[in-house]
Image (tube, rainbow, N blue to C red):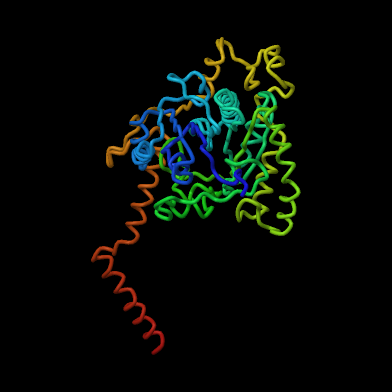
Length: 397
C-alpha cells in the first residue's frame, strides 16, 4: 500500500471563507487526518447575518475541534496576531472583491490581480516545509488576472492544475489517490443537487460533504464555469516534487490510455479537464501589469509593487497602503442595506436590488397562478356562449 494515497495529519488553512462550508466539508471528508484553521475577513456576526448556514458551519467546526479566526486578511497572513502558525496547505476558493466594479473590466481585473498576487506571497510565508498554496479560479480568470506572471515573480511553481471535481488536490502529483471516506453521516452531508450536478458551471468534489460556493454578498448563486484548482509550491521544493512525479509518470500515462475519456482522479470528462488546463496555461493579459516585470528588483526599479508588479499610485508609500486601495472588498458591512418588508439585511446594494427583483418576480408568478376574480370568470364563461351563438347563426344562414 502506497502511504501517499491516504490522508495524513494535514494542517490546512482556509482563507477568505464565506459561509465556511468549504472548511466544514474538509473536516467531514478527512476526519481526524486533518487540522483546519478556518479564517474569514468579516466578523462572526457578519458571517451569521450574511449567510443562512454561516452560524451552523462555525458551530460545527468548533465542535470538531478546529480553529476559527475572524478579521483575517488573506494578503497579510504573516502579520496576524496571535500568529496563525505553519501549514501544509493554504487554500483560497474563488477569491472575489464584490460586484461594485463589475462594469469596469480593467479595474476589476487589476484589483483581483493585486489580490491573488499578494495572497500567493502571504500564503507562501506561512507554509510548512513541502507545503502547497491552493488557488481556485474559474473561466478566464487565470489569464486576465495574471496568475502565471505572479507565480514566476514570486519564485513559485505550479505543481498541479486540476478541475475542482478531482479530489487529489491534497496529495502528491501523479499519485492515484483514494477518495475520502465519510466517517459518520455520509449522504446526509451532501450539498444541494445544483452544487453537485454542474448546473452552476462546475462540480466540486467537496460538494459531497456539504460545500456550497457562495457570493461574498450573501447566499445568491454564482456560476463558476470551468473552475480549476491551481496548486503551487516554492521553486526549490517543486523541483523535488517533479523528480518524484517522474517515477509514476509512465504508470499514469498507461492508465490514461486505458480509461480513454475519463480522468485519472475522477469521472470528469477529459474535454472539460483539457479546457481548464488550456485556460490556465494561456498568456496573461491583465491590463495593468508591466509585461517586462519579471522579479522584485525589476519591479522596484520601475516604480512597481515588488509582489504584484502593478505601478504604484501617488500616496501609496508602502505595500499595505497599495493593497488597501486595491485588494480589499468594496462591500459595506452587513446591515447597511435592509429590506423594510422582510427585515433581511444585505452587504451591498447589488445584493439588495437582486433580492428585490427576485421578490417582484415571485409576486408576478404568484399572481398568474391565482384564479381570476368572479367578474372576470363570468366574462370568460360568457365568451364561449356568444361564440357558439354566432357560429350557429352563420350555419343556419
